[in-house]
Length: 184
Length: 94
Image (cartoon, rainbow over all chains, first blue to last red; front, side, top):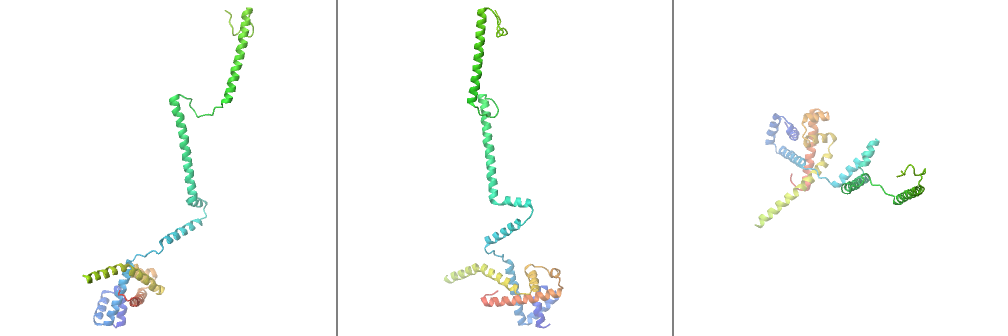
């Protein structure tokens, strides 16, 4: 084997058979220039090992993350399905914040309502108040109705009393008070 | 005492520079492999960096054993020569 063949075998040393490796080693012992080539090949192996050990450094990592996330967002935006569109829009931050605010509003309303009902129940226990939801009392209309009723009663009782007095004086009965007044 | 202190400083400096040299070397190798032909690059990257076996490379690239070996030989030779030139330019040893 000449140096050209050995040269080729040097660069493919790990892929050679045992017999071929032995032949190459024998030649290397005798040939100075091939030994230099072998050193070069070993240098390459060393460099490749260093390359493998290196973890690639991310240049401007923040920008890369931003680019990836933007690309994902752009891809999601192209989806045609309505449902996917709705889901995606929910993921957008302003709408999400609005929904969170609305949830808080609903929860606070529920708490206020519960607190009011709690007061009524506590009132029932202590004062024996009428159960049921609170109703606004129209005092003016209540007063008018009450007074009208009272005046009507007073009027009828006055008429009745006068009728009785007259009937007793005359010692007679009348249609107005016969059913109601029993003579002694 | 001064000499040993000086040696220590040099040692510390070389250790600190090591990742930088390795990073520079990695970039250099990426550039060197880019100069290979597509077939040579494919065989070289699969064999050297991905540690794929020769029969697997033959299957992946649909080549026979002779073609794979030939491409690997030329790729290794080219990269090796370029690395030697790179080290000579940088005046550092592999």
